[in-house]
Amino acid sequence: MYSLYGILDTKDFKTRYIGYTKSKLEKRLQEHWHASYFRREKNCHRCKWLRSIYDKKLEVKIYVIRTSDSLEEIKDLEKKYIKISKKYRKLTNNTIGGDGTSGLKWSEESRKKNSLNKKGILRPDKRFQVFAENIKTGEIKTFLDKTEAAKYIGCKENAIASVSCGIRKKVYNWKVKFIQKGAQ
Image 1: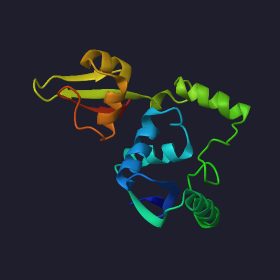
Image 2: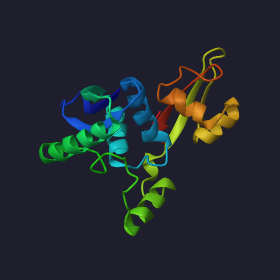
Image 3: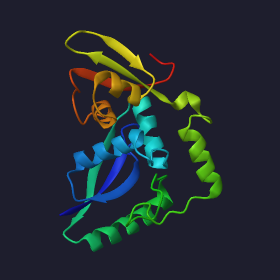
């Protein structure tokens, strides 16, 4: 069973993203959070919106719009809902739907800007540090990035990411969260 879903924030309760999934909605929402902070596409409009929600300490809700047993039907419904919704609200979808961003072509200017952002050149204040607390010993550490934290704790980087976005509760007795550089 496939679900066409919407994501909205609890500030104005307006749908900002429409997608489809075969997995459970809560799992799909966690995947969106994870992508917003740790994946290659983290500079997409949806990811920036989700990070802004998190920074403002607001919440998002995910809800079912329609369901279907057919993947083709759900992709068609997604395209229709995105097309209609873009007329009335500011969606964060990058494409018209159906297949994600596989057909999206970035301009040369966008590619250069994205590259500079990833290196922290354009917006160095938006880079994140890792704040970690050992729940057994009480030790508190701040790391420059998830790579440094993973080396110190003795785990993989994706384990740090999983704890930070709520997929896991801890990694080797460490609770971690991401903070903007300069903020404590």
